Image 1 (cartoon, rainbow, N blue to C red):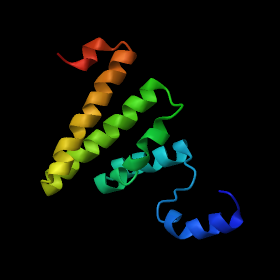
Image 2 (image 1 turned 120 degrees about the horizontal axis):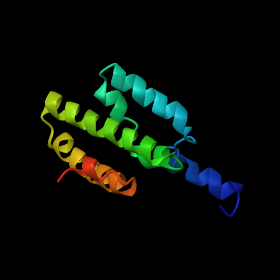
Image 3 (image 1 turned 180 degrees about the vertical axis):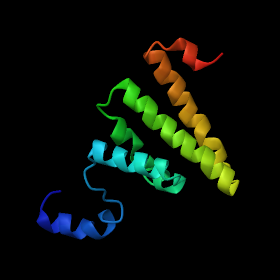
Length: 111
């Protein structure tokens, strides 16, 4: 911002999308807790920040996180029949396959 006045003027619009800094380990813990409780909605509420959670993490950790979100979408589709939940795992599965390739776990990529 050019100054405090401009920053203050922009706050009304910004606060709707403002997200606090993400502490990946804490959020991942919440994702795991929600998954263990069978709360697929609790898992998916963090999906918008998935890339932030994956930043700086090992490939193995990213793989687990992608699997958690993919599984939550499968459960969401089973519960609601929503097309959104039916299609989202496809995108996540593509990322999982790419990640497995990076990890040189080719046998786990499927055929």
